[in-house]
Image 1 (cartoon, rainbow, N blue to C red):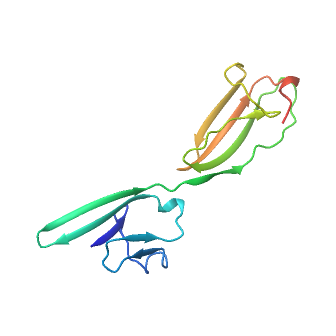
Image 2 (cartoon, rainbow, N blue to C red):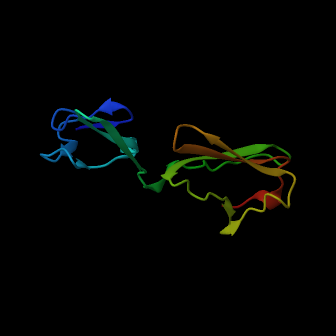
Image 3 (cartoon, helix red, strand yellow):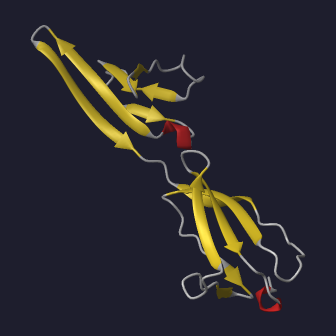
Length: 141
């Protein structure tokens, strides 16, 4: 029997300094201190004189939402265009929304306001709130 992660052979005690533990009969695999990068497909391959059998299982690592970069406070002139950016991560994908003075920003009801979401990395996203022709009414926190 041999265990694989994303088609790379796992050797307990050698790979990642005791990251993996394989039972003596190689029927079970344990992962210590699991991290996001440990997610993916795991396969055990069993070979006998009669043939080879593969069994796979997928592991999804759930990560708490984290704000990596908060939006900066800005002072801008009336009539300017402004963008606020927040970078965040989490698995599954966190629900993200913008608030002003503890109330949701109504993106759909104001054509001057839009949001854009971009992937920075596999589970890292950047959300940008853009406001064109800023007015005094847009002030807040």
